[in-house]
Image (cartoon, rainbow, N blue to C red; front, side, top):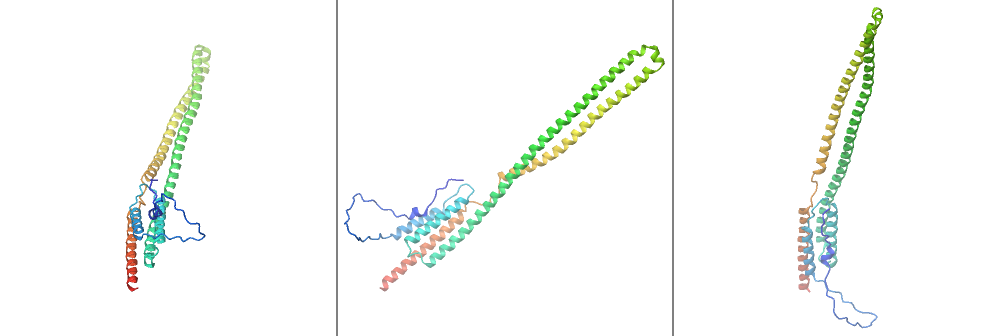
Length: 289
């Protein structure tokens, strides 16, 4: 939030007085007459006009502007209250109505802007929460895909190793049978040939199974990769879109400089007219007395 000087109406209308360098001894009377200090209407009007000009041109640099709006309205009301206290004769019904009209209008305008900022802040919070959920979902998706891929490969290697061990065992058995083929009696009874044939069939079966298992693994991995890639791309698109909205929110409000300046100018003009009206009435009364 930007640092904006706090403008207080009371500061502008506070009368200045010089402190006496000498202390005056006052008579010790039980009742004293205290003279009421006369108010310099010209100085009061000059102060209030300066304060109105300052409020009308006060800039708020960075959003959110809600706090600035509320403080500015309080400063304006404080200024007008002090003005009425010091120059009540100027604040007639006409001026009071004009001030109330302009004050209500600017308060309504700024209130709408405060609501718009509040709504935008709420929506921004929802976007950030949704972004956090998508980030978490993406992280979980990557973790799950990585874990499942590792598990599939691990299970494949485990099963494949069993088949390779069995192939090695069958191949060793076949070699042993072939070495015994020199025995004429076994060849006559065709026992060795039957054993070799059976062993060869078993070997072919295990090798085919090993090849099928590898192909099934590749198919499964490819299918999972395709699903993972599609889901990951969907999440990335959503995340990029949310980050873009968060980085570049819609401009629902500004520092309302134009409307605030216009309000102060209207009040300035109304006070000028009321002051002139009061002066005319006072002169009329003097001439009639």
